Image 1 (tube, rainbow, N blue to C red):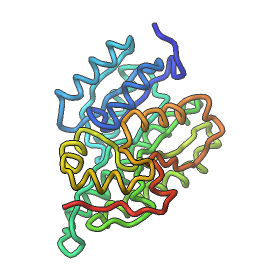
Image 2 (image 1 turned 30 degrees about the horizontal axis):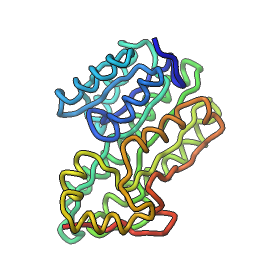
Image 3 (image 1 turned 90 degrees about the vertical axis):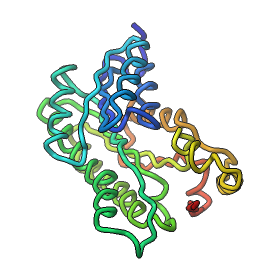
Length: 263
């Protein structure tokens, strides 16, 4: 069995049936971790990730749970512990945006975006942190936020607010949990070439031109870029890294750019 930076660890990754979550799951498996794959709808996609993890010589389980609901989060963690006997790493990856002009924003839109991008971090982190503290073992919590938490975007006020809150929640949890040996950090991706982005924004020539001109690196980020950052934060090499928001965005935040919104 392949050894690696995460050998013998168990990682619970929310929203890991596709996109960035899937990329992190596969990278962690390559480095020796067993994976709890969380999904809410696409059981078929989650099963594919499980198969890919197993093909890399690691154990995996797919667990359906809505991570905005406390009871379902408790079920998710219980199932993870029941299957693997422990959990060492939590990656709070589940999230989505729902672009809507402010004056057409409904309470339902607001609640849905705030809940998945911020409340879910609170619920999952609480459940996993309680277990780690009870077991007197250290661990890692990694939150996938967004560079939208650093600057406003049109039609994404609720999403920007949620991601800014997630960034600050990361820092607040970091200082509270580090005495227990639990490090909490975040990764704030920019425009990442997930399947969804390539099928929507990046499928249009004008959008591609704007994106490529907007990013100082002059190209889309990749899922692998984010997974590499997550691997570092999950590894022993990051033991002294506490409460950072790591921008993986090709220089957007460094250039004080504002992420545009495409119709």
